[in-house]
Length: 262
Image 1 (tube, rainbow, N blue to C red):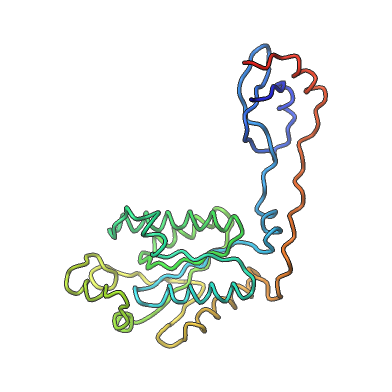
Image 2: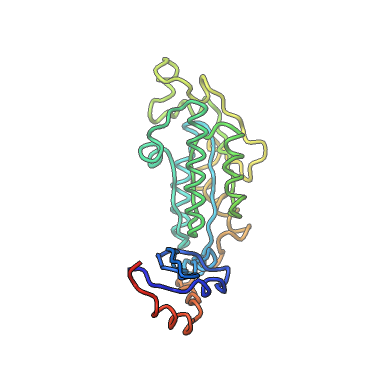
């Protein structure tokens, strides 16, 4: 049942309040439903709770270049440092959120947009997100970067540079073979282009570096940029108790005079 609060009480509310539950506001004999104000949990408050801040590590490269493998190893190294992270890749995105998308240029773009928005939200929570997607077009990767930039969230583009012949020789899922035979159309590196990132934050070569070395390069970058701590993480402490709404005794007294049923 919504409570009844005079309209004058809402005029003086601080700007940092957001709205959630319903209330009834009395103004000049009229009543209307408005959400009840409660203080929002800020990004900084969540960072204090977790003892870390969010960032997205975007791994891009050919199929078979080692993106997902490096991402898995990086997740393990972050976990060992008590850094909460989550990995997004084709296995958990294409089979769920984006299962209705094909590999056409338009759907590839939408695929990247959705992934970017999900990564941004997870970063806002305070999670370090790693994404492992071919993301072959510069325009789409730039879009992902801009989505993060607009939210003031760090975005680290990692180019997993692996020669096509090496990636094709690995072919763990037999995709290159199917693409060569024509079973798969618009396959990156065969009949669809891959546009190399012009200025990624990090470039890796899995044909020359081990998976552990590649993940270590990323971990070092995150540490040097201050995105994760070089010191062992302390036990997480609760965020400071949120400030409560100011008391309004006079408003409450006035509200009691208004009929509850509206």
